[in-house]
Length: 239
Length: 368
Image 1 (tube, rainbow over the protein chains, first blue to last red):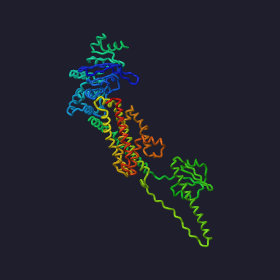
Image 2: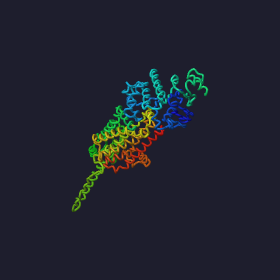
Image 3: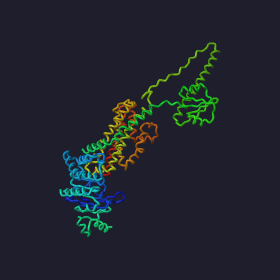
Image 4: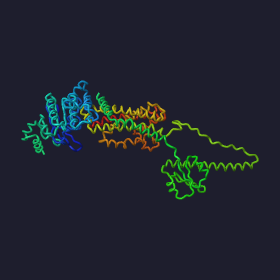
């Protein structure tokens, strides 16, 4: 089942075109990776997918509804690239606030906060103010917020930046588990070994998808030993 | 429901930020108190006047008018002497002419001194004239066979009454209603504007748009959240001004509160709106000279109806023009709500316009 479909999506900031005719389809129960260097347009694309940006040409549907759409929004969990948290509030208050935006019932809210905090190993730090958090802790709290309302779709923009390798492994473990539970996950990254863990990939450069497919397919297609090599070859072929 | 969540979050944030709370609740009181004492605790100034060849009678009269008269023998360079001896003026008499040199560092002080001197001279001249006349009359009377009885005219006593205020009314009494409103306007604008700007710069506002919250829910959440603090601030400022500083309040305290609440609402929605056009706290501060300071000129401290037509037109687009007028009418002139309904209506319109524009300003992010 197709959960996210983007057709012919282009976007420009003034005269500068940042996305050029992007087509992509993400299916239920898969981890879809958007890989590319910073400035390639990944974040812009992600913002369009989650309905935060409606100033684009083309068409995006999420769960068969054209974006932006309120009911689709409540099924998306989004983790922004920069941690958008309230520094004066504690970790728990941040979670509470976002949970109430999704209008979760009190008991469910409690359960979900416990679950999300446990997943990102923040339970002992919930009563601390976010301004006292380290960079990695803020990333983890952002991830917990993305998961707070048990969304069908998770869109994570560079989720593991600044997170230690052990926790990164456990987060990827959880993403795989969520995928098996039927969630759809879109992840952006510029780390190639994370790209290996995705079911399908789109390589983005200068606002265009230069190639896409499963990691194994891509390596085979470009006769490359690793994905880094694929990226160089795919990019080189076009440019 | 989501609006309530936003309100609750703003409360949590504000209560944690003690300094901002302090700025909002204490700073207006501090400035208002300072103003109060600046305008009410003035000591009477005694201007210093240097005189040369001036009649003793005139000198005595001048002394009666609280002028410190210093008599000089020689003339020399008058201007240098004034500066060297810290005089406010210099008076010289030659034949029938009086030459007056004023220091004029403070034109209003110089004018006051000039008026006092003119009054004294006029009085002296009248006295002399009277004496000459009496003398002449006496001579005439003596020569007449039967003296004519002449009634002495008595100068009338002036009894003054006032429509507004009384003889002790000072400039501060008409200024203070405007100041009360202006402080509410200024502080609410600043705090709400910067608070929303921070949300924009740290990305939480944009983050909110990835949740199913609607634009108007965000705007109303902000209005309610910061509005509550604006209400508390307004109440503190108004009660302090009336009960502690004993500012003239002829009309109803409740009317004053209603006007200030409307002003706060306008400032709140304007601050939130303008924060959309600033990229940093520094840029937000730049709106103060452009948007906030001009308001004070049109708030009624300077008489608007004596301004040039185009300036009056500018006044009409300033919320403080209506706020200042309404406050002055209620606090100083004792008018009721029906007398100031035009002002109130204007303020309401400003608020509605700014709130609507706010909802549209968020549209550049998301259409819903």
